Image (cartoon, rainbow, N blue to C red; front, side, top):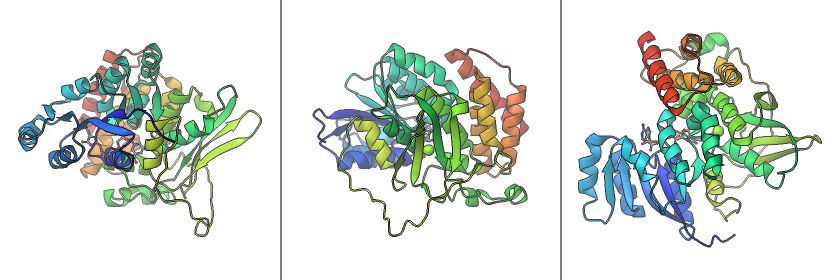
Length: 386
Ligand code: NAD
Ligand code: MG
């Protein structure tokens, strides 16, 4: 398929795992995409190299202490350079941008995503935390401003691909597959003493540190259940998680006649990224194909909510609604950072999240300000327990 007009991209979090893979997609199809803006938190040298290579109109670094270095390094080029998180929130509004790829981590994705939606940009959504925290608000805005939200997460991309051409047909169930992470076969006792080095070794995917820990605790799958509810308008009782250790089936949709459609592929995020950028079209790719000679088996098992309570926490938060998913997200962000800094043990993460859920003031229909306040309050509270 050929794309007629080049799509102008803003890539938020361009130095990360999804960000760099998005740039690889751009490199593979320069006839389809142009990079208008790239942003990063603090990895300034990588950002400079990307800017020199892709020649965007604008570059933003959130960490203001790195601004001077960035500005000086790009001084010989006609690139606008900005510093500070507020500049990320603003750059997405630039007129020429068609699609904003939200590839930053955590709650920081929320405000730029809202601004992008309000200025009519399509969102290629990698930053699932935005949907976890404020899915209802994001959907309301996307409807109001008629902006599409295109999933990048591999499971949601799989579901999106399975739903193509099925708009009038009733969905009975969404089936999210989960690799089970590095501790799939560990006992409860073994989980008590796992290290961050073990947790950072995902069996199938190479990803940023935060989502890799979320995969090990299965918080990631819980977040994906919440994300699926808001992206596809399907209630939690119709979203099933199945552990599938080979990560070949990326997810499935079961229709009311019992038929199940699945999307399969090698674990390579460039495919879902590219699909989000070109939907409803597909482009030729050089990505590795499935080899049926070496692929011996596809296996399935039930997730164990007792060993991985975070998945249960996500279901509970989703059924409570309101600001509860925001509470879980904020508590989780603090816990993951603390675990990565060797301040808490692996099994303390779900315990602290549970405690935060019990102790936070519940708001039924939160506004953006309520989300910001809940996030701030929960971070402070959980931090004080650690
Ligand atoms: P990463 O840690 O590799 O990269 C994160 C990027 O965001 C970096 O460029 C960093 O500079 C930027 N960033 C981080 N915090 C920021 C802040 N406060 N302000 C501004 N910029 C900030 O992360 P990743 O693995 O690429 O994941 C990005 C998002 O995509 C996450 O929400 C994750 O859940 C989601 N996701 C990732 C994968 C994957 O394969 N990596 C798959 C599905 C979904
Ligand atoms: Mg995923």
